[in-house]
Length: 243
Length: 221
Image 1: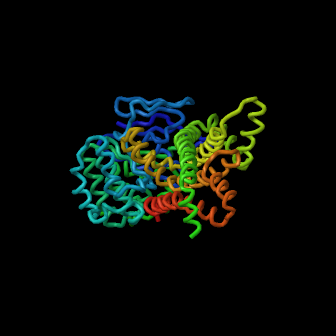
Image 2: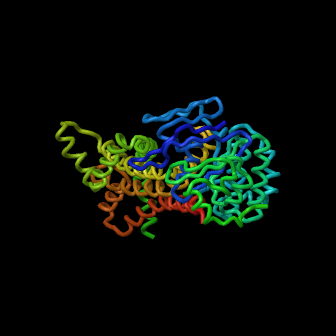
Image 3: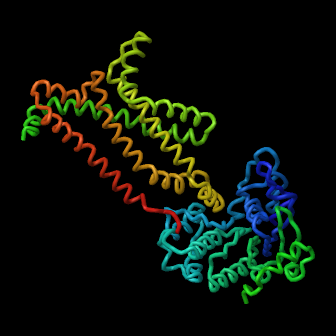
């Protein structure tokens, strides 16, 4: 299980996250929702150990990482057992999409046998040998998702990873995430698509101003108990549900 | 045609001078590339200690014309220290310092501006630090700085001319000697230009090729 226990993140006098606890369970998906500036991406980056909290504790299965005022060494390194698809994707610009996907696999001595299937599924076969700046945002997003999935992480974190995808590829990403869940991968994802969250998440957390306002099963999206989440949900478009 | 007559007639002297120029260049280039790169990397890694010192040195050195630095090292410094140093050594030292500072600045700026998120993406994909450096940082940095570094080396080659003013027998000093004998400045200095073009044009060509090959816009649209 990937657990955050009372994690906080402060930069200077700005408190970005305040005393947040949550769990991402193997084979389950946790959706992180909230308005802009709520700390969703910061939370995901903290959970992905790339921008660790300044206080609190992260537990990755039986490994505990404590964070405090002093710099914490990430030993053993949690990646790619936990990996993250960033909102800005961060593909390496000098490598083709194929090289972007294969480099981490080759270095780990892993097989790339899954690439052909995923490339076909995501209509990437004809563009795999192009550089990231020679393809569209959606195609880059698909490449970043494939790169992360082929690493076979135990926990996969996605920061608005479907934001640039069209409806067909969002559906394919949705099916892929369901498959990963069945395979036991724990998934944490930030999204603004309530329908997406509703259909795939087993747990939902709602953040506002760096605080966890409400958490629970996906049903809280339909019947939020806090006034803040009610207000937020009432403004969102449910028509984005993937069926 | 006098240009080629001068080249043919004084070829031994000119080639000897060219040899000294190239030897001087070799020292200056090697020092600049090796020590300058190391200084740049260290400055980027330790900005508050090495970086601050390198920046201060760069600020001071870049404000001193090459000729003044050469003369200062050749005359007052040696007089103050009561030593006599071979002008070639003085020139090699002065030009190496300038090259080290220039290369160091270029490397430091490139490393410091390197997008941290590309490193982060490597880490979350499970790449080791070594792999991140070898496969992500180094190739991108080399592509970015190679043309600039090459242009700096061409400038350093041209700056070796100043060494003649502290009596280093390099090609420009040889050309001055020939001119004193022939008194045909246009032809003599045209012959000198031919020599410099022979060295500089291929270097500029390489810089152009590198720029065209690796200077491709990598930004996402």
